[in-house]
View 1 (tube, rainbow, N blue to C red):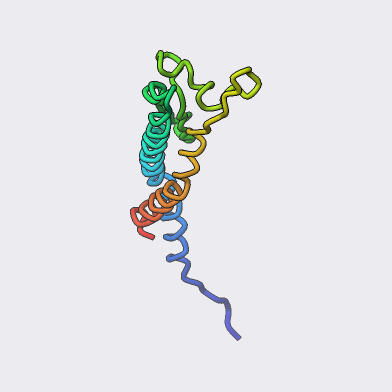
View 2: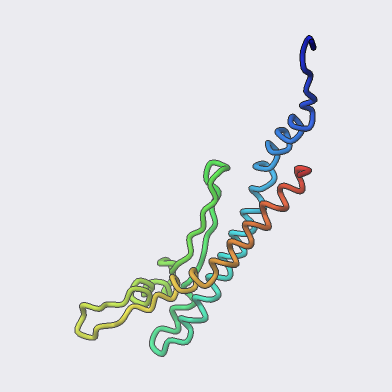
Length: 138
């Protein structure tokens, strides 16, 4: 009868340590993916708005800002910069004025640009995670 069983857990311990390194490695890579997609959404929305007969000047008011909050949350805000003359009509361009006597229809240029870039953003996040895992030795 055996007195005990021994297990070699060294590889499991190494994997656990490596998995702990993934979050440290992935943050800057996710930030890069968000920056890249934000620029693409901004450019796509600007292109769409730039084709509008009456509001093409509004394209210059579209901007983006990426913020890192508390070192953990990365967020991007893409929209009309209300501090610029071109951005002051952003709500009217994007959402229209369906109740007005001119019944301006919404354009949804920003929403459409965001939707058009979703798949590319997901690919970017997948690449970021894969790269972070490789950097952690996984």
